[in-house]
Image (cartoon, rainbow, N blue to C red; front, top):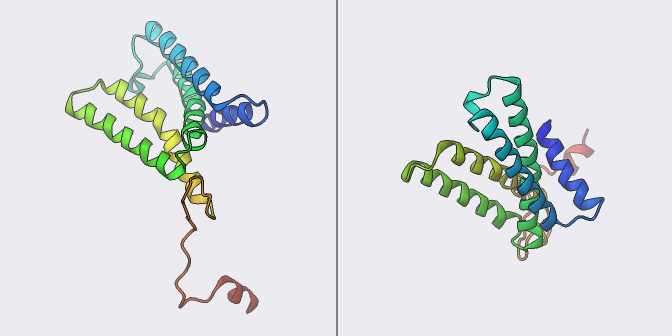
Length: 166
């Protein structure tokens, strides 16, 4: 539920209050940085494997809230305002997550840092894929895309012929 709230905060700020995606991306990046900056000195860790007190749980939920708000703002900014489109944006996010994974296992990037970086990128990855798959027509969130959901094989009756026979 908190992930939905994070997404709705960004969407409402942009759609209903006219705050730009550039601005919301910067604001939520800063707020998330403040959350981590506050959490670490108090708890001496940002690991999700050591959340066993109410205070640590509160910090983690706060980070998750702002992660989803940031992910929504940054994902929409890249896909829509930078004109990359939904599919290319999703592929970019997936590539960056793969790069983080390679850094984690290749040069031993800190596991907690790798987790939070990848976690932040899961929101724009999922949102971009969802937006791409739910779009129809030539726009489909990107220039030159012509995505349409798969159609049933022609040997099957169409939905209109099935519904008229019932």
